[in-house]
View 1 (cartoon, each protein chain N blue to C red):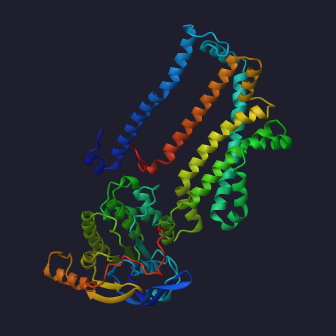
View 2: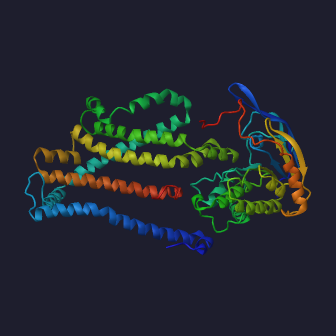
Amino acid sequence: MPQAATLEIKNLSKQYQVKGEPLPVLEHIDLTIQPGEFVSIVGASGCGKSTLLRLVIGLEEDYQGEILLGGNRIVGTSLERGIVFQEHRLFPWLTVEQNIGVGLLNARIPEAEKRNSVQEHIELVGLKGFESAYPYQLSGGMSQRVAIARALVNRPAVLLLDEPFGALDALTRAYLQQELQRIWELEGITAILVTHDVEEAVYLGDRVVVMQPRPGRVKRIVDVPLPRPRDRASHAFAAIKEDVLGEFAGIPAQTLAPADAPQPLLSA
Amino acid sequence: MTTSFQDVASGTAAWHRQERRQRRHVQWRQFRRGIALPALVFALWWAAYAFHWTDSRLFVPLGEVWETAVRLLRNGYLQTSLAASLYRMLLGFAIGSVAGLAFGTVLALSRLFDNVVGPTLHAVKQVSLLAWIPLISVWFGLGDPAKIVFLSLAAFFPMFLNTFEGIRSVPREFTEVARVLTFSRWQLWRRVVLPAASPSIFTGIYLALIYSWLATLGAEYLLSAGAGIGNLLTDGREHFWMDQVLLGVVVVGAVGFALNWIAAHLEARLLRWRGKSIARY
């Protein structure tokens, strides 16, 4: 079992410097995540939810406020915090087994235990038999499952997921949501999922944090007191989903970037 | 031959076996196709003299070239020339590609070094290789040291440029994964940067090899002291021994082909993981 620890985000703010002007991305985020909880963060594009995850994982460092794990301020990256990105980001020159093994490279446990752990996690994500396959031989869904195994193999205190199923087709997505839910229950891990899919957020989360953009703020936190596994067709599920969706009603599609936003790389 | 789902699901060992079988079949077919043209050329060459289609002294019958080959093998001239050329090529290749690898790496990893040394190197790379000959012959003479300097230069630039590009183009996604997994600088280098850059570095090696061999011939023509295949060719030309000239040409071509074949096989093994990411028309 991973060591249980509370993740506290206190008064977190972040700005980017764009052409000398500060562009606020996150503003006064307050969030406390209990050990073993599954929290979904949902919001439209540009509300800073990915930035929030990158701050928690330690890939971005310049921020105001505090991020504490188990009472200690986080510094940089650590094996206690794992992340699954939207792209699988598997190393193409390594097999499935080696890719997962790479997660344990800096873990201070004996070799035999590492090998067992890798094998366990291959079976956990349902890829037994594909140990020697290279990423080019795997489908998108399979690759993402390897990425999940790689993030979990360290038994991190907190698992972050940044729109992990965004690049997959709807059928694979539904299947992997079920799988993630099963794995989460088995491992008892604390998980934070960022998504723009409200149904996914309600299906997986104990709580749904609704974020609003420009600058990113927590608008509302919706509890999901439904038993697992959740029934997408049930009345209660639909009611909660409507409730969350209601927070987004009336917001026009954010397709035009404001004048002071970072310019896209490819402009007309 | 199609792979059934059972093959894949029951374990990739069976799949790998089938992949190997298919690959060998394809390789054999490619070999048959590739050898067809040279075989045709040799056949026409032989036929031209056997059926008296021509009597020119500017070309010789296949039989004579073969006899010359046997003669030069018996008195050892062919072996010593070839050995001398190959030795020079490999030494020049080794020095040039190691230097190219080192410079490419350092310039790609250190902004300071790139700013200081980069502009000079990028300017110098434009200078035609042959333009170095007068300078080299004055500084190093016409013997082996001069040739090896020339060959090292030939191997250096493709290796340097490809290594530089390869290391600079490692996708940020991979370095972020390395950071998340708390890799040290050495681990990042050995387990992410080097493998990610290996296709480019391999291209550099391949080009350096080709250019070294081409430059070996050039070096032997222009810095003409010593023995070598180039000298065998010049000798033949000066005495109008067409059979020797043609033999030299065939040998040069054969070595080039062998180098290509070795490089292709190394690539197939080392870069197996790239899979089918390229188009097939």
